[in-house]
Image (cartoon, rainbow, N blue to C red; front, side):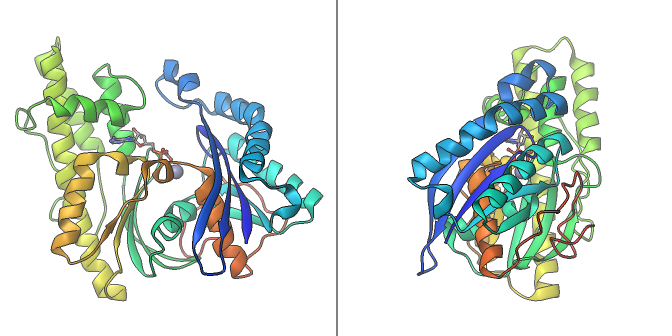
Length: 348
Ligand code: KG4
Ligand code: ZN
């Protein structure tokens, strides 16, 4: 089974072809991606209108390239999948419309994929892990714990009540004059900083449930930065290290609580999975690895290129759905907002 996946919900234009062999193994035949980071960098964040135009300009070529590299034609595909949301609506429309046109012309099944579901199912593409597992999805737009029980069957245990973790990294970077995207820049600075110089709060630690709140931490960074301004390079590095240490503590505490909730509600997970751009952070990965080890669970973090937004995860989610006969109508509408629960495919 071979599916084309198209991703245009944020600032990456991506197209990929993934194949599932009869023995269940997945192969990524091509995975084309064009990042718009340079287009948005001057604005310190993603500009929706610029993103939508860039998707229009790039998508046809990326799809053609994905087909060429996979050595196949439209007629060799078993389905066409695109992210139908959640995301920036202009971009979602571009990808969804392109996928519908290809499905119509090629007379192929069409799959409207929830972008979050694609992140959630990626560890099955990369590591073939079994249900149920606990997913921490942490990106620039999302931060949530989800029990992945089956395709289309998700239980949200908690999430952020204000900023996403990646967003907190991005805003902290901006405040300290570091480049966009902020996560990698803050992590780099933190390497040479003192994580104990600034006593920053650890919001929500010890609370029942699995929610996050990060805006207070971000404010605390701003107040400390204002207190010691003008900032020297050492101040910036120390602020980054102290911020990152606080985030790590919070993530570990919240994950411990989410694991407990998982056990109470659905029994033992098969793994702790971390996905989304924030999973690139080595300190966070290390801390979660330790926590999973203590809990006797494997920790799975898909390779970086599959952790951040990409086309292969959309194609794979398409395969998982197509196998179960969960295809969609060409009239399916794009969605700016689309919760995973109660069931992907049903409007929140
Ligand atoms: O999943 P992603 O590529 O896009 C979406 O937001 O959907 O995630 C991007 C986010 C950005 O907020 C970025 O700052 C953050 O992930 N990020 C990181 C790191 N690399 C990327 N955050 C912390 N540490 C990193 N090394
Ligand atoms: Zn994403």
